[in-house]
Length: 348
Image 1 (cartoon, rainbow, N blue to C red):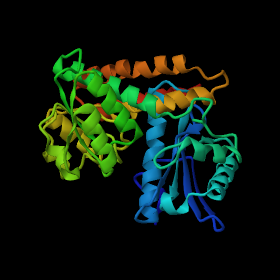
Image 2: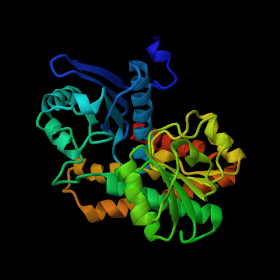
Image 3: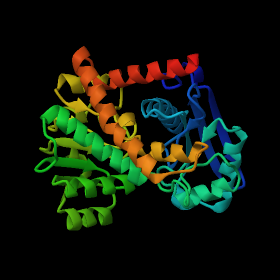
């Protein structure tokens, strides 16, 4: 593998491959850019098909964190970690201790936190081996509610810009994925008067959404062509791809999933179809904003975190306005804005 020639390598500052035979730990820590501060981003535990898939995922996620933290106005760079394997089979105290030692060996260039299939309790074990952990119980805690809040406000911004509506009453939203963020988002959308179409691999979560929110349940592959106003991807990435892009009937794509576009070209294709795309790393920044206040020297404050998350609405409106004025896709505009912030950081 020509590692440095990979498209997703994108001049990462550091990529660390970690293993611990005794616990079965196989992990990758990627630090993309530290111009604005130490790299920060969660760790996900996933049973990847192969090591190359895991590497691609962590590189893309790490770069996304660089841009996310920049657009959120945080004094943090971009980093991410993945643990490879089936969490149901491999999770153990010893494994997370080994991962904590691996994070500690990076020397503070990367702060980790919980992500897919990892809990705040797991992170407490990691924290027993390293100080470079955030999102801990008793401090900023679970970032999911803040991610859901930011995504909800981002949907409101997209609806205001695209449809001219100040509220979500009467709108139809298709939510793909009912994890902790996706479910919380559904609760907020329902309370705001939106009707929901949902899908997930977890039947229990689907039944609960149908009972609590009156949501319509559809099959996994049927979520893309629903006749809705907003398609909200809240599962894993690449939901906007060569196959699905022709199926969308929604006029807005706005959700909390990372790396929603399977390829950069899909940004332009969405624009060509008249679909407003809320760049994923802008709309889903609520969690890292909350976590950042735990990394910063001053004491964590939930009210301050909430105020910062509320700025996502205005950040997205700026992206939408700039994209419209320059006749560019929203993703490209967000990237340009993020790179300008990072460049200024390099010059300070």
